[in-house]
Structures are given as C-alpha cells and as structure tokens.
Image 1 (cartoon, one colour):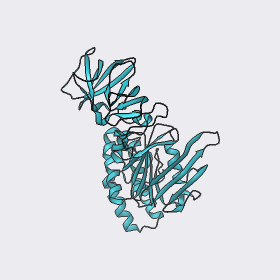
Image 2 (image 1 turned 135 degrees about the vertical axis):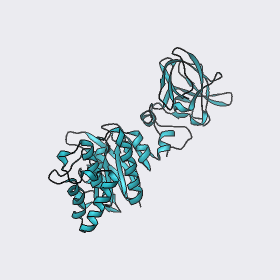
Image 3 (image 1 turned 120 degrees about the horizontal axis):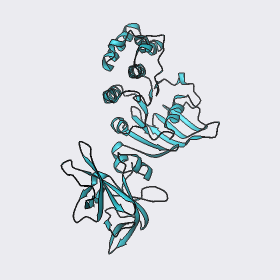
Length: 361
C-alpha cells in the first residue's frame, strides 16, 4: 500500500470555486513527487488538504494506511515549508531551527548538533544569532527551508520553497533539498510552477490543470510522451510543436497530412484515421532538403547551448526547430525539415488526449 493516498479528493470553496476536482494520487514511502502546473490549477490547495489546513469537500486522505482526512495538522507529523517564509520573529535563527526539535523531545546536545550541521549545509552559520527582521528575504526563506528539514517527520510538504530566492542560489538550494531527501528518505510532496525544478527534483511529476490531474509520470515520460495537448504545450520551453491536420491511410502507409499543406508525414506508430494534432519536440526537427515540411524562417534565436529557429509553415501554422549553435539561418530563408518518426506524437483534437501507441507513464 502506498504511504500517502488521495482518493477522489475534492475541494469547493464557499464562493463556489471548485479548486480540486476529485483527484487520485498515490505516493510511495520515501518518494519525492512534484505537483506542477500553472497558477490556479489546484496544486497548493491539494498540498493544504494533505497538511490538514484545508478540509476536503469530498474524498479521503490516507497516510500510512490511516485515514487522516479529519485529523488536525499538529497530529499528522509533517514538515511544511510555505511559499512565504513564516519564522518566529522573537526567536533568533538558532531558536527557529531548534524549536521543532525541542517540540518533539530531542535532547539539547543532539539539538545543538543538528542545528550546527544544518546551518553549515545551508551556509547560514553566520546568521544563527540574528533575528528574522535583520535578514534578507532570501535568507529568511533559507532558514524556513532549514527549519522544516532539520527533523525527520513522516512527510515533508513544500509549497514553492525556492520562489523568493534569487536565481544564483536557487540551483544550490535545489541540490541541497535533493541531497537531504536522498539521505533521509522522507516522503515528500513538492509544489512548483517551475518546470526545471520539477524535472530535476521529482521522482515523479504530477501535471495539474484546472483542478484535475493531466498526467503522472517520471520526468522523462512527461516530457517525451505527454498524455494530453495541455501537457505537451505546458511542458518545455518552448512547448511541443503542435500541428493540426488529419491521419490518413495512403498506399499501405499511415501518414499525417497537416492543414493547408500538401505534405505527407509517415507515422511510425500508426494512428486512427481522422482529424488529429501532430506533436513533436523542437530537438527532433532537423533541416533536410528532402524533408516533407517546408517553412520560412521568421526568427533565429541564439540561446548559448542551442538555437531556436522559428518557421512559418503557412496557414498560420508555426514550427520551432532546435538547431546546433554552429548553424544559423537568415530571416526569410526557405528551408525544408524532417521530423524524427519515433518522436512524433498524435493527439485527438476533441478530447485533447494522446492516441498513438506510445506509453504515457
């Protein structure tokens, strides 16, 4: 049995807003699962229901096989890192770090050791005798993260813990959180809208949209085999290229025919004939004089490690190709491109769900 389970969890607020629309989720013991999605998708409300800060309108929440749906937050044995730091203003940093340990009966010598080690790991030793009012916002959030992770609860809940920290320190803290999790193996539910964070931290990623779960999977599967048009467009920078058209059987071969084009794109995974949307990541599009698609270069972006070449295909359709930095393309240049057949994904335009033969987990 999974350690944390949400069963048909739903939350409707008094004003009628349905923030979470009956989601099911199972998190294994010691796993780090990331809830990822745009603002307003229900990820923070889901986390708050697990914490006991919101009561589900319907459904159940179980921890270690125990139904905790109605259990008070203090009884759930969780460490919660809020989006905005919530430190005790009358305590020094040392006191803030020590307090949760003291509260759970850890002896003084052990408390001092843990405070010292955690402060060293977080690079905040020089702040131990300061009060929160004398810290920068980034340092306050570091202390908030350290305070939640200093002890070993049953569950860590993290709501955008790095959101207020500058980019230079964000990667360092992300690595620290991952290392701490690997060392302590505390089951963790982590909320973010940052895709890079989600992909680098999560054992699995839960993509949410409008209160529902779009897809659950390991980061590679979510990126490479999106289960829906929403996931395909939301994940990636830029998102997956999406071309409307139709799947058809021609001379014993299944092909995709884009709208407003005479192109024929062979499909490695087949597909049901009819209206469809073809999806492909930019890194699987390459220049090829014999390629089936032709486009006009409207923008060539140099990004350091790669180039993003934006093509106008006609009829309003666009395609972004991720090219080698040694290649460059002039605005207005006409080029043909090839799509890697193993990385073409086919979606149903009505349901938005993927319908090729690939796996989506």
